[in-house]
Image (cartoon, rainbow over the protein chains, first blue to last red):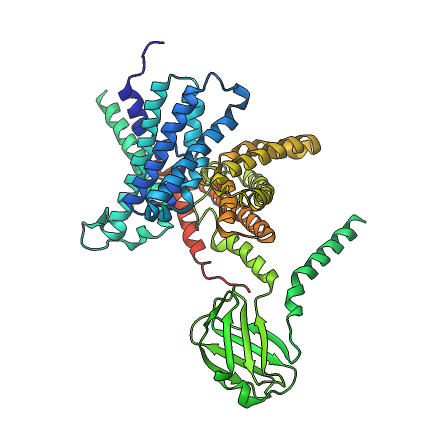
Length: 206
Length: 313
């Protein structure tokens, strides 16, 4: 098999064209639930990143051993194992951040995005390609979480990463839990709008 | 014949649940209940000694779990016929806890002691109501959003989905409870809970799939397609994790699972009703589809904030 997929292509796909949060609209629960600050987004992003990378590599390594009929249960068990590892590590070394994220770390086990990548990519491709694909997807998830978190933190409490940037609180509403739905909805609409405008410009030029 | 059996069973279980309520009534004290955030009302069989009943120094009150922390009384008002007394506390009470009240020298005995608690049935119901409305899994805990946005286009789909979810949730919660209490806890295997619970959920889904296919093919044809979606959903795995965290007993677990499932059904149904109307509305092109669904869900979430602080019992 020739190396037809370059690393940059694999990476950019996860971050941009197939971004898990904004494009595929998968694994939305934490994006709405705990994205009140940038820090929360980074923490959960890191957790998802590790689970995605480790699970992809594991499945890719064992893809010839796993019988196709039991592949879904084996994916689930692989993910559950790695989630347990991350859960215990976070609980031991970062108890503060872990308490803030609550049940969502354990719920990574049910994230559709991870299972989807295993089913669509890791079970067919080489280990190295699976690794870079997982890195791209993990980073894409983290970027999505950080963007939403930054938006909510900036407009909700006027801060970024805990530092006071604006000096006042523009809209306290964004820090409220229910605002998560609004922020995600507005951002999706914004990306759609950019796409529409971009296409129109292209059409006008041609 | 079957109905009669069922009714007997329901009556019996009701009697068992309510039993603690009337067993604890002492002789002279005929009734005791919480009558507000910081008030306990006690009723007597006959007129009580107003000097004793109205003296706050004669009372000692504490939560059953913490006998060392005495709760401070603000006043004790005796009713005009001396048959009841209203105890007002300085701080709001935690009415989910059992409170122990003792009065010195009220009757012939030196100290009369009795407990005040919400009826256990009411407590169970409050767990369910809380999971259903106050802590609705979709709108205030943000769980199960993938499936929520995926299947809330039509009312019929929403209903089928909600019923299947409730069914799977109740069965898997029951199994998870047994596993957690009798295997994971005794052998100190708490760290395996994620692996075990996700396995049990997959197992339940597979079992429901197989059984439904054989027993009721008609039902299977209408609900079967949703079963696959259940596994990849955090709302189903969240119920066992929450019950493990809170150390619920079996009845509480069932109530939590029922409330969570019912809450999901409610959320799906509300959302699908709106989605059917939205198809007729004029929406800006960039908001079409998911963005609009998110905005609507946000409005529902704000509406559900209104349930916070709701207390029925």
